[in-house]
Amino acid sequence: MPEWRVFASADALVSELADALCAEAKTAIVAHGVFHLVLAGGSTPLALYRELATRQAGDARWHIWYGDERCLPADHPERNSVMAEAAWLAVSRIPPENRRPIPAELGAVEAAARYAGWLKAVADFDVVLLGMGEDGHTASLFPDHDWGDAPGSPDVLAVFDAPKPPPERVSLSAARLNRSRRAWFVVTGSGKREALLRWKRGEKLPVSVVRGRLETVVCLDQVAWPAGK
Ligand code: 6PG
Image 1 (cartoon, protein in one colour):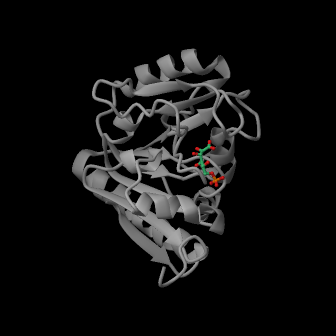
Image 2: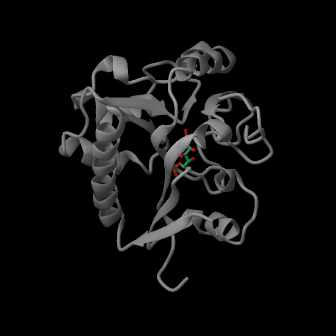
């Protein structure tokens, strides 16, 4: 089971997570010269990305990947890459060639194939950031869909009929996300409580099959997980 860390507030969560991320980047760069970070989509990580921008986090040794993307035009405001670029990456010192959005504008099948090709050159990710939906989905791995957790699963999945719009998406598989040192989930807000309870009870959900080799941490605020729960 992952480690559950409940923070006093969403602000405290963001501040301590930014500390941990920058510290992990230093460790990775000392160890192997680069830091491979997978970004989460959705609205929850936005505050963290803004905090990283404020801290001017990142440089030419950082490599940015995405856990999933929505099949929308490259400049569409609902794209996870557009959100992360606007909140942090576009003002960072991370060179554009190190910031690799999923080319979801090409359609799920083509984009998944392209991204899988780019990922071949990458061993384990250092940190994977992930969100969670109210149904227990993470990245674009949804209940009643292939999570790509079986041995031999492809690294990147084309996703259709996703219950969260838009229906066509691209997602790293659970197997590829698990090739990471640290997996950090960021979950805030009351709407996620039921799914968190199901996860804690050991129900098999998309979130429950994604974990890091060294650690898996679920970062929660007290709205998502009230004290004493
Ligand atoms: C997406 C995300 C998705 C997200 C969760 C939580 O593209 O929608 O990658 O997995 O992390 O749905 O979304 P919120 O953070 O907006 O609640």
